[in-house]
Length: 299
Image 1 (cartoon, rainbow, N blue to C red):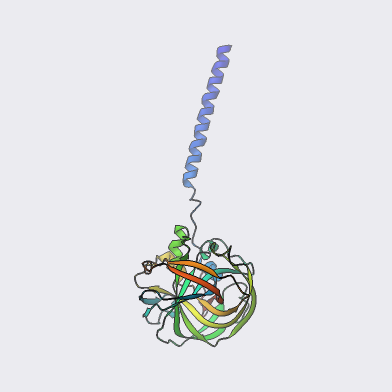
Image 2 (cartoon, rainbow, N blue to C red):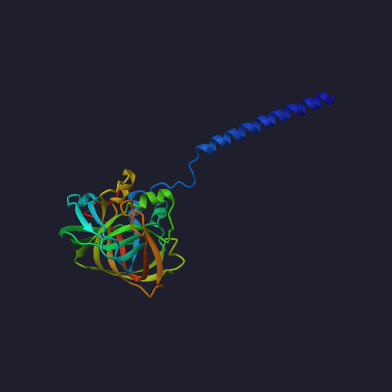
């Protein structure tokens, strides 16, 4: 009898060990098949552009080393405009991501938008006198009427930077480092006359600049995507970046904290430029996403 019981216990232990081994093996295979939790999928062009609102702060003047860049338009509406070589002038602004009226961008667009910081430098170039019809993309403003404008002379080049060495995750850096916008003066300078609440999205500024009211005033510029010679943009990134069109408006806000930052260029063509000190001395403009001539970003 004792031998029978002992044998039964032995068989049960063996069966249990085999069962545990099978479960462990199954879990191991399942684990290997699960994507990395840190991987972030690219957003659709529609989701990223519709929620890309940038608050532009005046900076103290800074002149980078002499740098000439050859720029080619990326958006299909402007593909017939000529390639142009420009020289980086004085830095004028830093444009940083914000949310309007506590309207958070959807995921995964938010993961990328919160790291889109653009330093804007004076440039000059050929007047193009191109007529366009602009439609707002952000859901808060989609009910506003379309506006007809003329895009005239290039005034700024806005290029991607990081603040205080806060480097985004690798897959996000691989995207945001290719966002270059060439900003043209536009006419007429129609007032949007909208009152909003703006909240910082970038982790460097969220503890420093409080949520604040802002009144959107007159339109001044249209910033359109370009590619710098020497910047090899991956196809999946190009398919999103080419749809980023931002209309810049003057902005009235209450007094905001003065912020001192260190900026470092992340675009491959400008990565060799030295780090820059920048003092933000108040918000002067807001850049809002638009579509040109009814060519809307694909979703």
